[in-house]
Image (tube, rainbow, N blue to C red; front, top):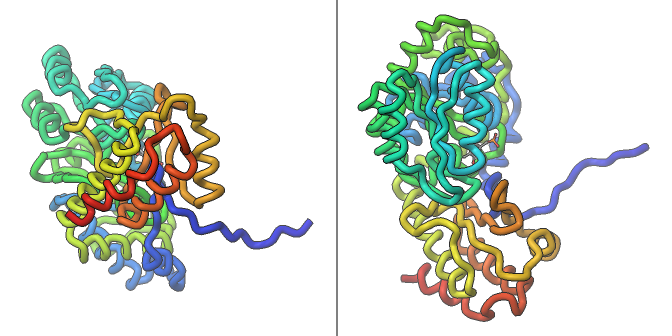
Length: 390
Ligand SMILES: *Cc1c(COP(=O)(O)O)cnc(C)c1O
């Protein structure tokens, strides 16, 4: 048997993540591997923390990348803040709220579920009712940007409500960080996790997290040991903590952190507000094109995520066949619907480096090419161009 090197094609990634990785970030990843306790690596880790604080808009000391994907960031937040017997109010309006429930229940805690229709934002009134009805709830958990549907929830209002009722907050910002407004300190978020492969356009496999002082107090004063040794922040803090003396905890993914450092340098150079603005502007251009061809959005305008555009399939069109053609004929990946929306919607991502005019044009013209008579032909590209040059 002879297996040769793997050489992937160059695709345009316009699904729910990963997004296109900038060549600068890929190049950073191939720099020489050094030891994870090498003083030079340690000082790079410090820079990663400082730039992450900027991305999250926080002064939280405990702002670090977890050495694993977004799902591990989620689990890090839950296993550290929640103990067996606790009560957690979990908002579900798509796939990821369901995973939060799994996390809570596997800890041996109780999840009080607030359910909203897929494609809608979390209903703040229902959350307030639940907070009133459950004065013993310890945590409110919700997804800021629900990638499975393209809906954005009002994180600022939800966090204010939680604190009014003396609850901690756990916020999923995997798809919002770097793509839409997010202010950890101003909104008083207690625990937040994200991913590198969505609006930060970095290689997948790292999960930035941040914890408030309030959250750290809770973690330090737990009654039970954190069930996960790897994710126990009491131990991780010794590795990432501010002190000069770093204790070995695990081997950091050295090269992946080079690429993350580069992604954060690029975000800093662009400016956070400019990045948010770019995501919004490109969303409006893509939207103009999609609507011109006759496609309609799943989410109400007020709650739409700029970085994840969910549209309903035209009647009589085969989902898998069209996505297959886009991939094989145009090297273009778009996302399928998940769960209740499977086979009914497409999710077109404009995240990070994927959020560019050339991708919008490729996507619109490729959709025209493969959809034929099921949409209005010849109008999408000019509709988008009008927005881009406005
Ligand atoms: C992608 C995503 C996750 C999971 O991240 P992974 O890196 O795939 O583990 C969690 N929450 C949301 C909202 C996401 O979009």
